[in-house]
Length: 459
Image 1 (tube, rainbow, N blue to C red):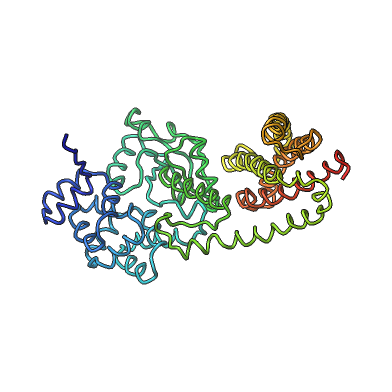
Image 2 (cartoon, rainbow, N blue to C red):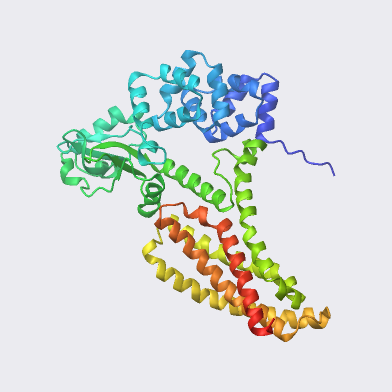
């Protein structure tokens, strides 16, 4: 039977490029979503990118440009003529233009701003003045603004005239007296209202908004809580200065989640994809934490040195140290991950500390007793009778199992408390997760182990 050859879309487009069949290539590209086009372009040789980009219609070209990686964007900008660059910039939404400007070198930024029209340049500079990671830095100033004395018919007419360049037209904001936010109205409400209905009678006056300096992660959580499509951003005087749309909120959640995972793994956060991060850059992000944790392991060595006499008196205890410390580390990580997730989603606050600890204590007792019971059976059946390890006596097994109960209890208590304390003193809870918890739990486990051994075995 002949083998079937599967040809991917990327291979097809690459063949069209090699065959210089640009008309066919353009006909295929215009039917694709901008995200997919950007993905295809990423697989093409760099020298072909300017040619491929010029095949796209103006609007699709701008949307594709936004979805491309910063390196590819910079390559294209350097190859653009001033006219081509202006065409792309004119099609960008302000928040997308800001994201691109933040990633580019200074000389490229100057060129982009030179080609932007004065109004666009003003809006870009206004957003750039806000601190990173706040609502003002991710908002767009392109929104539909209406007046409370407008009728529904007048509002729809205004949307037709001005909405083409706005980020969204589905949620419109009602302002008065120098942009003071007084209400909001959806396009659905306008369409189903009578033309003569006045906006102040049909609008929602209780509008949920955020301040320009609000943390972007808190803002993103509001989208999941309220199912918003857009959220207004106001200044200290409740004047509407911009909106945040759901696509930007999703990007923030993705960035924050990635950052938390990297911190929990003991790495410095990076905003680059894994395969696009260089070896030296990856080394720099990882080695500081490895050095800190290596030095912190000195505490473990000190504990072992302090109990050399006990180890010499009962050498069988040594073999089970890795199992106990590993179980403790895993138990602490389980609790910390659950609490960090609760903190990031706003489900848990520092005021809930007692409830969190009480819950984890009860869970720890159940888990510890279960693990200890199973471990006792394993020690007696496998280690003593099957492997003929005479050092594993009933008393030694009791030491190991009792230690396991207390280890799990302490590990889960530490695992839930450290992130809560970090939140209280305004540190990132993820930083206090796995690396520090493992070190603390290892030391506590060893101390408990040898104290229990002294009490039961009298060594």
